[in-house]
Length: 241
Length: 280
Image 1 (cartoon, rainbow over the protein chains, first blue to last red):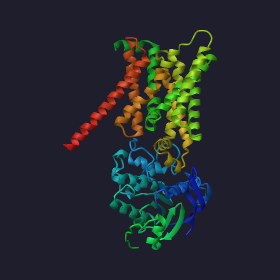
Image 2: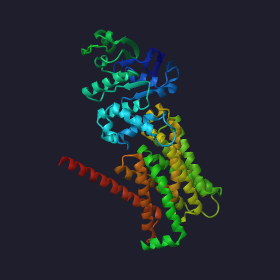
Image 3: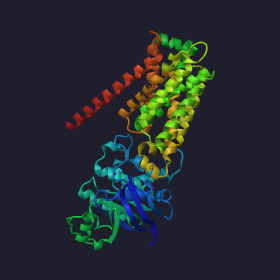
Image 4: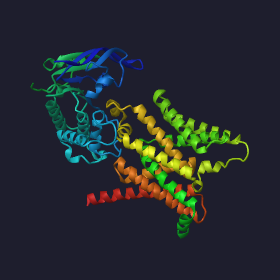
């Protein structure tokens, strides 16, 4: 397995408050990595560092052997909170089409191929029936699926999701993880979650981040590691591997 | 009304005025839509007022005020974008600074212009009846540039006004497109100053697109609708103003304001009716 993201001794702080300290992590092609940790543990920050939206104070990150802002076009990103306002006049399909930017021609409108890819992405997340609805009418689950479809539309090699199931119900959560598991056949997936019991049923490896990083295979996750991480016992949900 | 139509048939200045309405509506509909969805109306107002500096300096030096306006507007657009993006300054304060200092510089230069004292009112409130043929040609060129750029970079502008973070991840250079958009706002402002003057420009930029936003949920449809609404507002304002000899610019703005009020009221009514029909 080839390493595709390499994080080498990275530290980052928002105006003097350290958020991520001395993190080393190598992510390999085809992996399904879960990143867990308490609130304010630096999970989202680590993703933003990988995406080149933030620059590390110390250390180095490479994505496909290049700097993040060069390598990130091969990453599909699903943010925790959408950065747009819900009353923007745009429909579901046009949002997903934005994922084609950087892949399609630079001038004019989208091509027929772009539209087909966008519709395929919508079918994959099972919301192709609402492709022409405007985004202010979507439910939380539909919005999340739309964001995943937008990330898929760029045909990424790595998919990064930040708390993809924070705002949706348990059934939709299971659906989304089943979908991700399916995509994992040909895609590297990194998913941030605070729901440790849930994701360990799906992922290959768990990175526990509370400023510093500890890595485990899923079978190693037990009450003790969780207690170390969160500083308090956490109710474990039984799951089969 | 018949008098307006016969004036339109007989007088060149009225034909020029009508052409000016049509040409400015195109820029107004397209750029006004971006201004409304990106919520940069105040910024557009700042650029409009900075224009007085350019016009004042041009007058003082004996140049064309319209050319001075174009230069000042572009200057303001580029500097506001640059300072906002690079120096991370608060946008509203920055805009207020350009707004007031721009006007002050304009007034200083106009006061020092020798000879016949310039009619300040026509800068501030526009004079659509004095639009010349060369003004019309310049307006047409500004329209062609605006339509051309929006056509070429439609996707990029969409990404930049909708979701900056995602656009950046997809390799869109946000700084470039933001500055370009500001420059187009600046050119449209100059286009509209001919008609309603720099104080009222902001209303004409915002009202038609805000009306369209009540009924259309796509940027492209909003642009078409806003262009049509702007045309309707400017031409009917011109017609209403003609016979009682009212100031055309102010009449146009009041007309556009009435359109906006009607639009928000009827969209609210429509929503309530829809809710009722769902309940029944």
